[in-house]
Length: 533
Ligand SMILES: *[C@@H]1O[C@H](CO)[C@@H](O)[C@H](O)[C@H]1NC(C)=O
Ligand SMILES: *[C@@H]1O[C@H](CO)[C@@H](O)[C@H](O)[C@H]1NC(C)=O
Ligand SMILES: *[C@@H]1O[C@H](CO)[C@@H](O)[C@H](O)[C@H]1NC(C)=O
Ligand SMILES: *[C@@H]1O[C@H](CO)[C@@H](O)[C@H](O)[C@H]1NC(C)=O
Ligand SMILES: *[C@@H]1O[C@H](CO)[C@@H](O)[C@H](O)[C@H]1NC(C)=O
Ligand SMILES: *[C@@H]1O[C@H](CO)[C@@H](O)[C@H](O)[C@H]1NC(C)=O
Image (cartoon, rainbow, N blue to C red):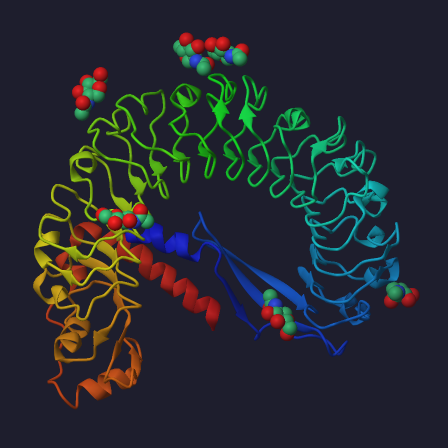
C-alpha cells in the first residue's frame, strides 16, 4: 500500500464546500446555497453538487421554494427541522435529484407530495421521520428514477415488529438499488417484503432485532452489499445465502453467532470479497465455511474470542489481503503456522487492542507481502532497533501505545516512502527523524505526544528528510502553550533560538522509483486547490 492509496482513503468522504459559484435567489431567509465538491474514493474524480441548504433551522414547514424554479440544482437539504406536513405544493415547479428530509417529526405526508419530481428524484432520505411504515408508503408512487432510499429509524406499529409484505409493490420503484431499513426494531421480514424492488443491490438491515438470517433477502438475486450488523442472529445454517451469487460484501458483526455451518456461504464462492464477523462468539476461525470463497479479500474476526489460531485455519481457495484480529484478548501468537495459507497474500493486518508488548515477529515475518500493519492500542513502550526486524512495511499505525523512545535503526531495512503514525504515545522528541536515512518516511504523525519545541525539532521539520510532512504539535514551557507544527509562529519562535535549517535533501529526486506516486499526489493537490478557489 502506498501513500497515495492512504490519502485516497482519507479523502474518500471528504466534501469541500465553497460558496462562490451558486447564489440563492431571493427566497426564504433560512436557506443557503452553495456548490459542494464531492470527491469519490476510488476514482480520482469529483462532482460539483449545487446544494440548497435549509437544514437545522427549526422550520415548521418547508419554505417557499418557488424562486428556485428557474434554477437547476442537485441537492435540497431539509433535515433537522420541525416539519410536520409534506404536501405537493412544497415541491411544485422545482427540479432536484436528491432530497434530505431526515429528522423531522412528520405527521402527514400527502400521497402526491413528490408527484412533480417523479422524473428527477434519484435519492430520498426520510430517516428518523416518525413514518409508520405499516400504513404503507403511497407517497413514493411513481418515483421511477429513485435509486437510493433511506427509511431507517422509523416505526413499525404491528405487535410482532415484522416488516409487512407488499409495501413497495405497485409503486413503480423500478430503479431502486439502495435501501436502508436500519433500526426499525424489526424482528422479521414477511414474505413479499421486497416485491416490486427485486433489483436492489445494497440493503441495510442493521440495528434491528432479527434473530435469524431473513429468508426474504434471498429473493434479491442482484444483491451486492448486505448489512446485517447489530441484530440477534445466533447461527448461520447451510445455504444461508442461497442464490445470492452476486454478493460482494456481507457485514454481519455484533450478533450472537456461535455457529457457522460448513456450507453457510455456499453460492458466494465466486462473489464474496468482504466478510465481517466482528463481535460474535465464534471462538475459532470458521475455516470450513470460508474455505471455498475464491474471491474473499478482507475478513474481520475482531472480538470473536479467538485464542490460539491453529496451523491450517486459513487454508482455502482465497487469496486474503486484509485481516482484522483486534480485540481478542486471549489471542496468542505462539503457533508459527497460524497464517499458513495466506502467508503469500496478506498485505494488511490489524492487531489492535491485544495488549502486545512486542510484535510477534516470528509469525509476521512469514507474511511476505505485509505492507500495512495497525498495532494501535497495545502496550508497546519502546521501538528498539529490532522492533520490526525482518518486516518491510510501508504503513505503520502504532497510535495509542506508550512509546517513549524510537530507535532510528528500527527502520534500516525499510524501503523509502514509509508512513508512520505515532499519535498519542509518550514521545518527548522526534530526533529519530534526523538519524534515520533521509526519505525513509513519506509522512510522520506524532500528534498527542509531549514533544518540546526545541532546536532538534526545528531541524527535523525543516531538513526535508521526511518527503511529505510531519504532523504534530510541541510545547514551549510548562504553561502548556502548544504550537501546531504548521503554525508559522512556531518557526518564528524557534528561529529566535536556533539557526535556520534549510532542506538538504529533496526526496523527490532521491527516490525516482516512487516518483509516479508523488506525481499522482501533486495532481490530487492541484485538483483540490482548483476545487477550493
Ligand atoms: C446547512 O446549514 C446548517 C445551518 O446553517 C449548517 O449547520 C449545516 O452544516 C449546513 N450543511 C451543509 C451540508 O452545508
Ligand atoms: C408553478 O408554476 C406555475 C406556472 O409557472 C404557476 O402557475 C404555479 O402557481 C406555480 N406553483 C407554485 C406552487 O409555485
Ligand atoms: C469446497 O470445495 C470442495 C472441492 O470442490 C468440496 O468438496 C467441498 O464440499 C466444498 N465445501 C463447501 C463447504 O462447499
Ligand atoms: C452442512 O453442509 C455440510 C457440507 O455440505 C455437511 O457436511 C453438513 O452435514 C451440513 N450440516 C447440516 C446441519 O446439515
Ligand atoms: C503448517 O502446516 C503446513 C502443512 O501441514 C506445513 O507445511 C507447515 O510447515 C506448517 N507451518 C508451521 C510453521 O509449522
Ligand atoms: C496486559 O498484560 C499485562 C502483563 O503483560 C497484564 O498485567 C495486564 O493485566 C494485561 N491487560 C489486559 C487488559 O489484559
